[in-house]
Image (cartoon, rainbow over all chains, first blue to last red; front, side, top):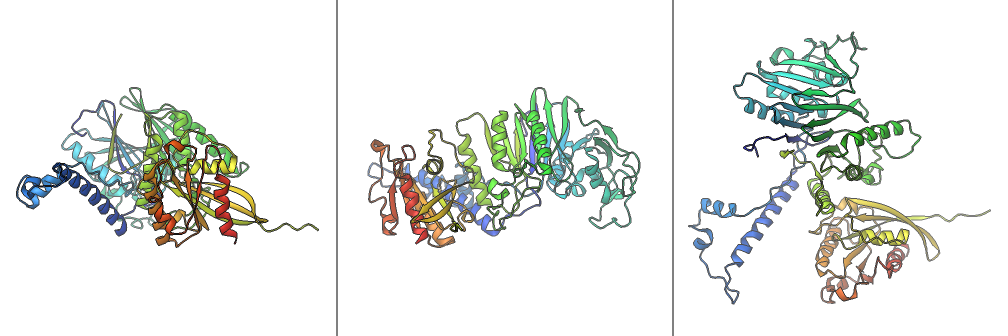
Amino acid sequence: MADRPITNLRVHVYGTQGSGSIFPSRSERLAFQRRSDRDLLLHVFEDIARRAGPDGQISATVEELLGGPLTPRTIATYADRFDVPEPRVYGGWTTCVRIETADDYDIVLDCGSGFRNCARDLQTKWGSRQERHLYLFGSHSHLDHTEGFDQAAVCFDPRNHLHIHGNEQFLRALDYHLGIFTRQVASSAQGVQTPIFFGVMPATFHACAIGTPTTGPDPDGRPPLGARAHDLSAPVQVGETSITPFEVFHPAPCLAYRIEHRGRVMVFCTDHELRHGDPSHPDWQASREAEARLIAHATGADLLYRDGQYLRSEYDGMQGIGTSGAIPRAGWGHSCIEDVIDMSVACGVRHTLIGHHDPNREWSERNWLDESLARRTAGSDRSIELARAETVFDL
Amino acid sequence: MTHNPVVIQKKIALVGAPGVGKTSLVRRFVESLFDDRYLTTIGVKVDKKDMHVGGVPLRLMLWDIAGAEDGFIPSSYIRGAAGYLLVIDGTRPESVQPALDIVAQIDRDIGVLPAVAVLNKCDLADAWGLSSSGLAPIDARGTAVVRTSAKTGEGVEDAFLALASRLTT
């Protein structure tokens, strides 16, 4: 796909994991392997069976089957004939999505731990070019959406300009330990979370506060960010791409984005809760209003990335996730997979990626859910699937 | 002074290959409704049904668990179940093997639980494809077998009742 020209937007998914990065367990790695072995063996035996005579007997030498003598090289060549599905990797790194535009801008949504690989790819793409601008849009301040920033190669190249957009809390979260905007780090924060700080990050960082930024010191006495202010109700223009922020519902102030380019639309909505339970709860109405905003922005979208961390039974506390206990998760700031499906269908979204996977959900269970989703949408021109790392979509 | 008997609550699971009619059986049992449209269950859908079994008030928590072609379901969804309905599509003999795989998985991961095998879609008599030899592994376990039709309602109450009776004795 990288060789093909970008006609609209090209979306690269780096991190889809919620809450924290995960690494496949030994049992999961073995399950990957068993599945691949089974699929390969199926192909091999089908190939051998094609050589059966009318009596069902097979008469062929190993060389005839392989097309050469039995060596690692001929085995590899033989295996390459078959289209063995690659293991689906749903998680790994925390949230990060990159968008390349047809008019050659680079946009990144969130900088969870997936941002490290994203930044590596950007540096490779930019090579020796002189114009090096990245437009980063953050959803909110939580660590799983900011933790990749100080590991990103783009921050360590003096030729780079990072135009960082987000609400004040997101910008503050990046600045607190690194001082990239204020050029200072409180002595109590210096080196606490990371040895990195603005002094060793030679890229140029431009802050754009979406919403109403504070103009003086914040309530904790930290200096103003010096951020350019941007009205929440207005789109940010990056070349021909319009990026419209809107507020969704989460324990921390959180933004989602509608990204529009030459009539195509992607909506990025990580960390949003459609609240269930008692309608008289003070958060219920705010959550429903946020959902209405999301529906308004996502109706007719070509691609939707949306938080679907739980099943409803898990949200209600009837069922644990993996080996974790069954505890109610209302108010934790995340939506149910069933709600994402209903919303996607109601909005006529062409392709929906359900992300922010719970770290306790095992690979086999993610596969089981994903296969059910594939059956649900089979034969339709709409698709809904679990978001996977290292996938690319062209709009 | 009136005395309200204690309601016993039991979790029962419905398991089987995709498309065998688990969701339709629950809908028929709980709401007395049937819908021809097939909508794959994602994960699990939980319903409840109050009934009396031998005069004992019982609340069944019905866990309709999504099927899988390879017969895998996460064991965590079965945990806590008092028993299960093993649903097989009577018109699709290939739905037997995933059911047997699920039984083996439950035996291994949870332990042997009371079960009733449900041979669904018995209204489609012309398309019936199950043979007694195909069901031999289920018979060998001594599992009760009930023919049902979620479409007409035939046998549905009996199937749930057969399992519920085993849970209250």
